[in-house]
Amino acid sequence: SEEPVTSNMDISTGHMILTYMEDHLKCKDRLDREWEALCAYEADPSATATAAANMKKNRYPDVLPYDHSRVVLNDLSNMNSSDYINASTITDHDPRNPAYIATQGPLPHTAADFWQMIWEQGSVVIVMLSRLMEDGVAMCHRYWPEEGSEVYHNYEVHLVSEHIWCDDYLVRSFYLKNLKTSETRTVTQFHFLSWPDNGIPSSIKAILEFRRKVNKSYRGRSCPIVVHCSDGIGRTGTYCLIDMVLNRMAKGAKEIDIAATLEHLRDQRAGMVKTKAQFEFVLMAIAEEVHAILKALSH
Image: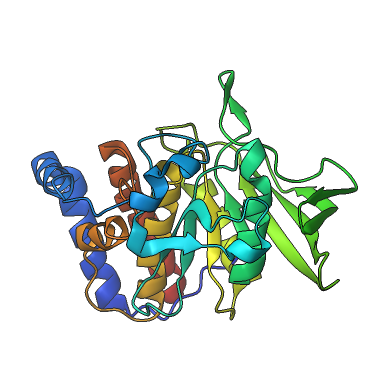
């Protein structure tokens, strides 16, 4: 069931990228310096996130969306007449069409806000990178029904199917119905299970395979992919960075600067990619995918 590796990357670019990755992975000093420089960025204001009425909607008090890039809900159709959710739009190069929405794992009292955001942003794909519980700690509220349907304020969510692909991930399909208009959409959730909090996945191959599944289902759409873990920055940032760089390469980009791309992500949501090990994992994952693409191109 493996997705074939496809890309418009040309071979010389591929070799150039591999050299860049291998230099960084071999030369730890270079990686350390780059990481330190990345961690020295200036934060932008997050006034809405810290407003008294909104603080309880944040899973972690120190992980907040910036005012300039937060997802704004329609307050008129919101349960609490609020436009706030702890979620950030992440664009690649077109500010009008965000590529992702990076968000925290919903809390019990923000699940309705989450589905409102999915509906209003027109998203049809959710990438979930945490388990509900890890080591006895709640990472994310189960914001979908275990079976049948559940209502979240103005939205009814119906679990259509749950397909366990392998030990590493499963795929759920939902019907999302707007109870005000009776319109229904299909939303697909890709749930990756083997990525510990603040850590890296045990298998690079599994996350690359997972990403190909996600992108196959998403192909050709212009709505943002909703990506979340628990805080919406560690695993979420790592996934978005890998995906953004590989997408740029597939479109034939000649220049790939991972640190600059991460800076671009952090300009839109603070703290994206939490640890140096996660940053290193991004480099290894991209190198592995480029190897696979070059192998496919040479056949």
